[in-house]
Image 1 (cartoon, rainbow, N blue to C red):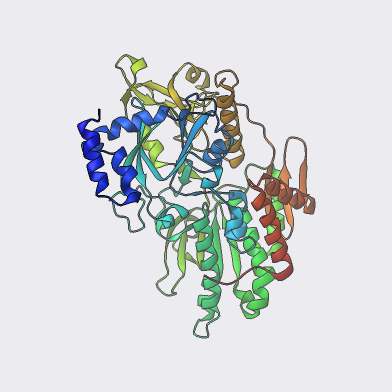
Image 2 (image 1 turned 90 degrees about the vertical axis):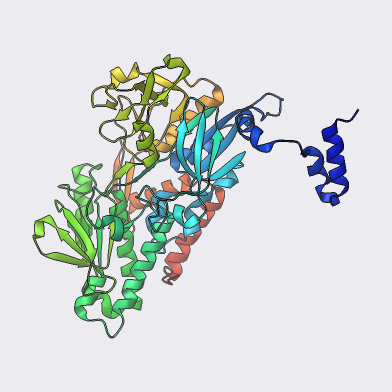
Length: 527
């Protein structure tokens, strides 16, 4: 016999159009959606089934960078339900980002859409908080792509600095992988946040590209004075690491190969300067290779000023579109520049700071307050060699100091929570915050979860070597096996990055755009 609820649904359905009939039958008027919403959310974590009818665990990945994207790509979809949460809907192949900022490559050639991974679900937003006891993530929806394509430094995600947040919703997990990456470090220097350009995302590259071309157009105007032209066409790069050096090299190639033909009368005003606080640039290379890079830059006319400390960046009131840089070594004298590209290191993601500051209770802690273990040097979340997140009693020493690796190994691990990439530090290991490390961690963790033996094999980093482009078809390469300089290192540099491109599509488009730029020149249109 039909229940009153079903008879009521049928009466409603008879008055509905045909296409709404199924919805009326499945949702009778007496069904209380709000009362069952939270219960349904938790229940959803175990309803997915694989082809053999067995339930799949829900694995939620936070972040779509080298760690998050690589892990999601390697995790077996037949064994796990894959859900990825990230404010951007794409992965950026960062080693080639400097090339897009000068038109050597088009922007889409270094992007991989996240949804092409065939995920069970993708949510575009920021993880705002995590309830480790209830296994629930609070997510703030990202309703604007522009907010995710540019480097963000403030806690607020909005370009106007508003403190309001977007729509919030909860996502449950069975296993959680924290791979949110890191932000650009400004060291609290005045004006950097407001006026410098960063180079960590595709929106940054687009903004730099437009700014450089705009500076040349302004300098070409007949109303612009020579003094203003020298300021507009002085390109300052702060940071002597691989990102800063490669951008300086790519910019020099753009000026020499393409803009010289378009603006021949402006070449005498162009200057490129790299500033760094360290005694030498490229500290990850040995002195011989770093000296080779500096000598190469000197021959090309690129100034490298080491042991220089920037203390302020501000707009130039006498030259529209120009900036003034104050350096400690120059006293009150300020240096004019058309653009400042900032690449001086990393700071922790605000989510990581928030999670490390909070306390929580776990069923296994017998009611004791716990907190995540923090690395004293980087501020990153400490994990063990199996990439499981550490937790310690609240109020105890929460930071892992150098030399405490062995003690940290005995710390408790947070159940079903893993950490990979720039936002984490493995206890007892001093690994660089590079794409190479994050990629290997992602592959290792996914493989271990696929095999079901996370605790069996600890992560071991394999150094494939370090490469940096120096311009004019030259580069340097250093590994445990050999060292290369010049054209041969450049061939290896391009071959390595081409083979490391994620998709077949980009393995074809990257060399295509390289060939187009070589034959016809770089695109210097501004849009």
